[in-house]
Image (cartoon, rainbow, N blue to C red; front, side, top):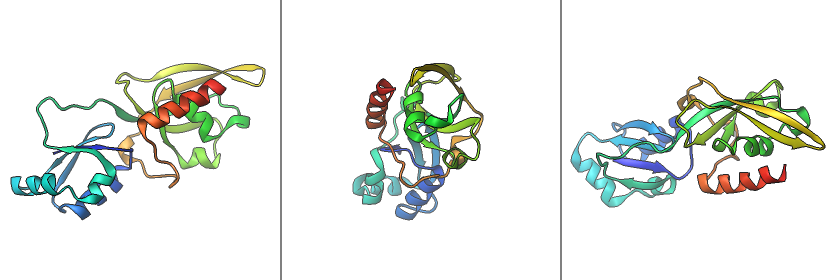
Length: 185
């Protein structure tokens, strides 16, 4: 079964939701971004879920259907580091506006949120870019033009845990909202 999330959620949370509403023996295999292949022990279990679509699953998945040979990932989650961010604009709105050039911000690390380090902001993004991300973005802060470096890290997005319960995003809504914020910078 192919399942596509409405909004990114941590893999551990996804696994718990699926297994508690379907069957503890299912295999959940990340395909990239918000797409997952869910394998059942029997075809009967698969057909039962496809026929009944438990409400807990329809709340988190935008698409639940039988897998097709051509199905593939169309986006991916990855962590990026933002370098050169001045403390005066150190906030999630600013990070989201900067990364809109490479994807949609999903979350940021607890270290970033707590400002325990101000040399690098660690941000989780959903991106359609399958290449290694290493870009510079020019932003205006007051009367100064600042270059912010955005570089992909090697941290595994599947190890992600929510650092804030207030963050959840819809790819289209976040992208549109972040484009407006970027335009305001």
